[in-house]
Length: 242
Image (cartoon, rainbow, N blue to C red):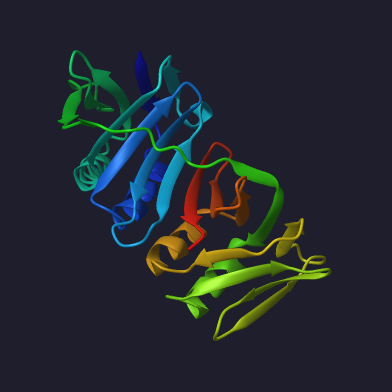
């Protein structure tokens, strides 16, 4: 069984807009503990996902793992049109026997529900590497957007030092003290390499979150960029070390 409902569509709609700028297809991956909408950037080796915990939904029921692929733009357009029609409460479920993705919208005027069915292709589960939570850098999202804007289309090296954290590339350096206003927090010592392209994706994600967190994968082969959205959702970007 897989079914979940959502009353406030805005955070999901914002996330779908950002993800739609990365790729045409999305993988919707569900488990008893999380729903993830995942895209692989069409040019970069970049995995971008919006992850939602069960508490994100008004109702959540899932007793199995499911992974399927569909076009992201029709999904976004449907939710956007429903919101413009003041229909923002909906349920998502799988329609047997073919497990088509189905959205069922509920009108506030007690009209008959609207049903939209999406084509579905079986997709292999996207296994993101495990995160090493012991070493990290956390930066205020305002400063993160500032770095993204000034260093757009470049890679940025992030180096925690004794009393500060250095963000740098061939063009600019940004130094943030670890103490004080809390703009930057760091634990452990390791270098991170983060992309700033595509600019619109990272910039928009920075607007959705108060802080941005950088982690290494456990195998040290990539960097995670985590941007929490409220208490029960987050953007997660995985970039493998070149």
